[in-house]
Image (cartoon, rainbow, N blue to C red; front, top):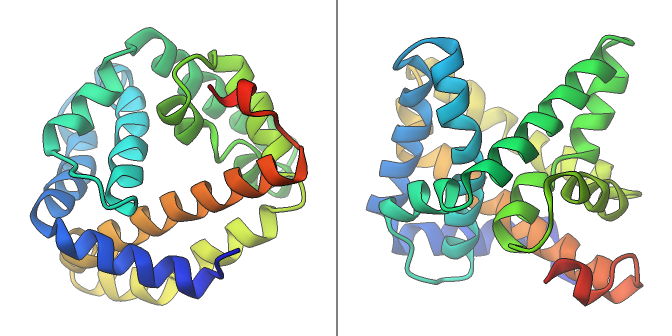
Amino acid sequence: MKTRAEIKFEAKMAFMTQYGNAVAVCLLATLLPSAGSAMVIGLLLLPLIVGHACFSMRVYRREQATVGEFFTAGFADYGRNLLGTIWMYLFIFLWSLLFIVPGIVKAFSYWMTPYLLADCPNVDPQEALKLSMRMTDGRKGEIFVMYLSFLGWMILSACTAMILYVLYVGPYMHTSMAGLYLKLKQEALDRGVVRPEELA
């Protein structure tokens, strides 16, 4: 299977072929949280997390991805995507009440949820969380290390008022994380952790 370095290299090459759309989506995802009240933004942005996951997977796969798909993928099945992301963040919050570390561990357990909602249209919200927990079992360290590999880039982004993040780091990171999801999904299928029909 692909290494982290190979996934990141492929992600970099892939998003550069659709640089304009990737930057536009990253800009929207960065600016929209400041566009209104917390409740309105929550109802709007939570489904767009699924839209962003869908967009990033299409970019990584070298499929043509448009800015419009960022919205349509999130809102096409609005109720399902909203409920799935609400469940995800609610459980992370509740586990965080037990101390920070359990919350972080559960955040990695549920990390696949938006990707599963975007990638598997017949999976219901609660099942997406359960599948994510099964598929990330024993793989949380790999997810953590992938995020950690962008720490230096995030520090540089902060030094540029997040301009570098929008223009390069964000698209690069989101495409890399999509590539990691696709790798871990295939590994889960190969190991029999999930059955193909569960991901239909």
